[in-house]
Image 1 (spheres, rainbow, N blue to C red):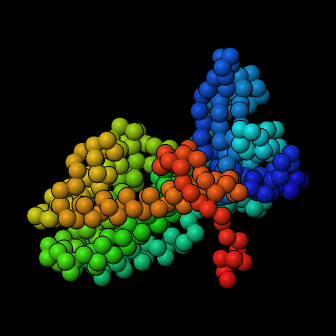
Image 2: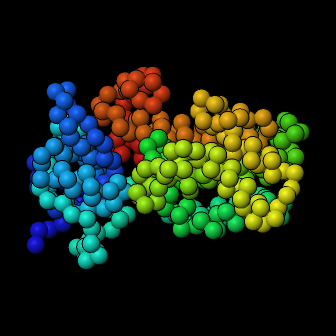
Length: 338
């Protein structure tokens, strides 16, 4: 029996058995019109692509059986090419129950948060208890989280753009909530309207719930690597408003602040160009918009630095910001710890 390795362990030209998650599957054609499937597999530290050509032994299985988000045992050859990391697939099958004895672990086959998701979840509920003192608002937020705990702990922040790994949703929510609390603490001494307790509580509730529609936008059956039909046709912003509204009805909450909370969810991406049907019109909605933008941009800048060529102090403008970025010379581990 061949030794099973991890995809991220393989060296150029090495053949081995490994477990991986199918991350993407797209139809494509060459410039000469030759059709193929472009597929991407990943583990928790590497992504690699493969071309499944028309007429190849894997074509029909790829078309009819390979499902995005599912896990596979692959025998293949790993190569680093001018087009990135690639796999020549020799054999492939879906993961079976017995594969756990060979070391299969789904958390080793997809990127995961560095922080423990269960601990982050509990910490967020502690924030709810500490910062939201209006009983019905606290009950609403807590109920939405507790009824979806297992799903939220595994949910990524997005499919591609930021925090796109298991547990990324909670990491993003935690950072946005901390950003909101920081903004309130910094500016409430200068602006009396920020000392209003309801405004503060709605800002915290909005930070926690602004992306909650991703529960229905991302497809659990596809390992959260694709969108549901609801996600494609409606999107997480409107779906999030529905979750908040439905839970309020279930709990028989009909408070005046509910409209402000719904507005906050609908406006958190700022403009219609970014998907929000309304722009932020309240203190709390603006606070969450700014906090959300900051966290997303910090993440994207960190990724830009990490994915650039290691010896290049200037990062070209092919990055999420569309502009050149000066990284400078990176310090070695010994220099940074000195």
